[in-house]
Every structure is written in C-alpha cells, then in structure tokens.
Length: 179
Ligand SMILES: Cc1cc2nc3c(=O)[nH]c(=O)nc-3n(C[C@H](O)[C@H](O)[C@H](O)COP(=O)(O)O)c2cc1C
Image (cartoon, rainbow, N blue to C red; front, side, top):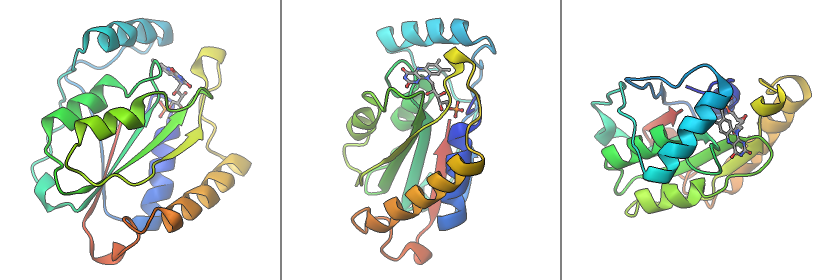
C-alpha cells in the first residue's frame, strides 16, 4: 500500500529502468490510517506471527523469471503483508530482488526474512534507501534532489547486482510486488 508513497516511488524508478509488471498488495482488512494505531497493531502481529489475508490475487506468477519485492521497514521487520505474500506464493527457481525504504533505522531483519521465506530462490543484493519518518511528520521524500540521488543509486545497484538481474534483462519476464 506504501502509506506515504516512498516505496512506490522507488518501485517506479526501478520500473522505468527494467520494465515489466507492477502489483501493489492490498489487504482484505487494510491497516488503519492512524500512524500509532498501525505501529501498535504491527508490533502485535510481528510478535505472534500473524499473516494478514491478501485481497490481491496473482494468477500468473509462474510466468515471471524475476520478482522484485518492495516494502518499507515496519518495526524493524518485513511488513506482515509481504510475509503473507512470500508464504502464499512459490517463488522457487526465480530471482527474487528485495528493495526497501525506511525511516533511517535500516532494513532490520527484512532482507533476511525474504531469504528465509524464499529458500529456493536466487536472491541478489537488495537496495535500500532512507524514506520518510512518519513518526516525526516526514512523509513523502522522493522528489527533487532525493529523487535524482535515488535514480542514480538504483542505476548503479542494477548494474553491479552480480548480473543476476542484468543478464538478459530484456528477455526476462519481470514482476514488481510492492506493499
Ligand atoms: C507501522 C510503521 C512502522 C515503521 N517502523 C519503522 C522501523 O522500524 N524502522 C524504520 O527505520 N522506519 C520505520 N517506519 C518508517 C517507514 O519505514 C518509512 O517511512 C518508509 O519510507 C515508508 O514507506 P512508504 O512511504 O512506502 O509507506 C515505520 C513506518 C510505519 C508506518
């Protein structure tokens, strides 16, 4: 859902460079708009392993060779809806590429969890950048100088990501899943 659109903006930058399809995960029961209520709910969900039910259904996941997964850091973890997605869909044999925005505290355990939930996927080095900090009233930041900087960083990352992504990029089917 990309509450404050930072992860979505990074997804769009990647999209401009690699093409393919893009799907934003939606939930049967969306998170509340209120920030602190969401933080509290997510803390509980993270503690007890709750997996929210996805409204989004992807019929044709088999046809994709590369699946980018984009998400914010939530409670220093992978957001529960992305856990739901990775548990529900079999990405074995595919290249799964994580990318993230966060409030300045980093990726936490999120990339590690992507690896754990995709044990039979090829996972190159992910991309992460500082996004907003809703707690302090900093919402959308991917504009102006920051947007230009992220465009350049994404370009460099895609180039060096041990060619898993770059090899034959043009003849691969690419999907981007974001939350
Ligand atoms: C429920 C919630 C929990 C968050 N937890 C963290 C956190 O643990 N560490 C962090 O650096 N940022 C945290 N953030 C900030 C987001 O990761 C950051 O604002 C991100 O850029 C939001 O992306 P979005 O605009 O795509 O939603 C949290 C934000 C929310 C809403």
